[in-house]
Image 1 (cartoon, one colour):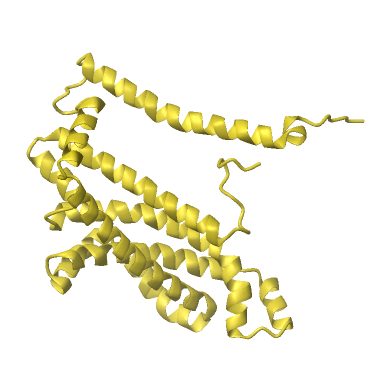
Image 2 (cartoon, rainbow, N blue to C red; image 1 turned 30 degrees about the vertical axis):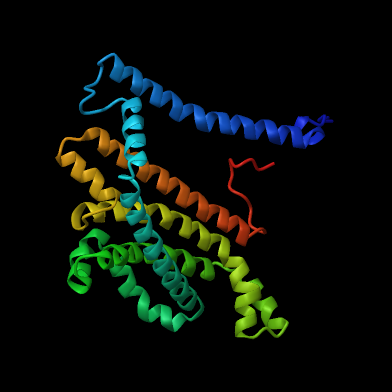
Length: 276
């Protein structure tokens, strides 16, 4: 006979959960801190060329100086504005079309081959097309982000709707659910967690795309700041822009994740996020 005694997770679940969260937070902070300290040490000991790879202290001081002088915020706001506008357009259109194609086989048969062909086209290759359509300015940047986000959300939405178990649909039909009730009480709750995963991935990709786009066809924004400062050999400014992009991407992705947890309380939480 196998006898198993209750462990701390069973006898003191709240305390165990707090300890696990503290350990996860410590590890999340320790790894980047160690890497930054190694970088600082390498620059101070001249193991690396500080003109090409400035020390983190130099990058922090330069970023603080530019932020205090108000030179950093216009570029940050320009990038954020384009990301938010393109993300909203791409998410809304991708979600609606994904629902339609996941629910109606004939619509899926008509549109899926064409969209699959467009999906594999590198999105930066569409930038000249958008420049011809919208001219210089905000239009091409927003359109490029929207096109990128659209495909991620469309694919995840259509796949999530198709993955809804047929038993759920049969149960709705047995209770006499109409089209709207089937969507509201069956398809939406069952597919929304997977849709929000795609939306979270799209949030990170949107930041990547806008930086690349701004480096090619923009006169402001963090992407323009990074590549323009590199051309002028202002590597400290370049790294300030890179850090701002990283922070922007992390914050945007986490906001989408938190929104997903708020909208889908029935979905399981991410593993490694303190799940007890």
